[in-house]
Length: 376
Image (cartoon, rainbow, N blue to C red; front, side, top):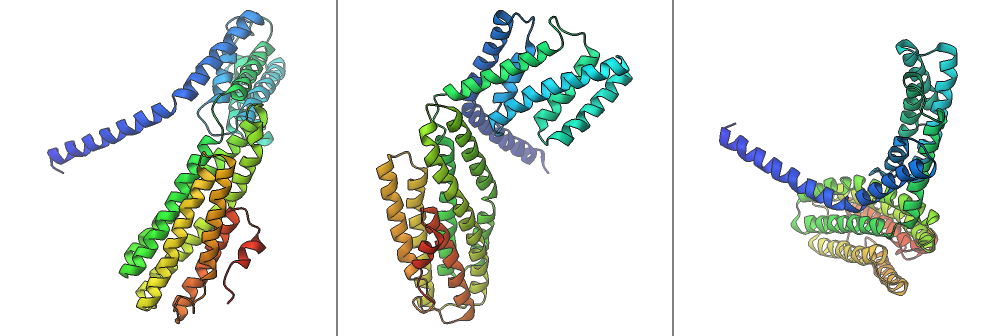
């Protein structure tokens, strides 16, 4: 590769990394402020109120419990507190039996790590248990006894929970944003499939399949964000009233997951239908129209589930999305779409589960959703 091309490639790479870094840093300002205030507050409380000298574990426990990780905070707090206490206990017991030294430290650390993995799969729990048992063997006990560090860890965890409860940020914001992004992708996939049919371009349909498959990280992120939001709502008095709405969102996400999976199957079948030229021009027009109408309904559903409007507005959007999806379902019969080929029949039949999944995402039961489909 010529030097100029290498330099250009490096410039693009650095610019991209810079943009990503700026975006990531901007999104982390609020969590970083939370972590800073929480860690300093926990340290100050342990030092000035409890009288512990240099309570670093209060600050580190607060940082770990809040963190930038998407693991539930309550679990992290418990892992830090219990892991720290249990690690100190094990370290102290083995210290009495083995004494201190490097080979004793190796035995203590290995035993602690194996016990931690036996008790729980949590990475933080394992790390805390192993670290604390090791420190007991290698370092002199702090003033007040070895369990002073355990108390500091509990202080840090409690401060993290308090900050979480008092956080002014609406826990619904992130999952709703993730839902909008996911449904935007689903809508784009459907429109791309419809466009592929109109153009008779199987490669474009395959690209739609690849795009649908690439939504899995978004689905995983959405599930985690709803789980975290529900946890915050449960422990925060200010947001407990949103638990029911978050529960509805969690139910809808399960059906959206199924709809995404159905879209992948449908896109793959579309590729085969195009390759076999299985649809007449009239059928192509009608099927593509149905797909585009479904994409329009998905856009409305995104506003209903991912918008920040009031409850009446949200319900209105849900009813509108349900109505449009029901209209699509009533047309999903091969004969109604001028489809008279086995490949085309299969394509229409594969689209029906996707519409049912979307109808269920609007709040209908499975039986109610199926009742909107045209009988075959």
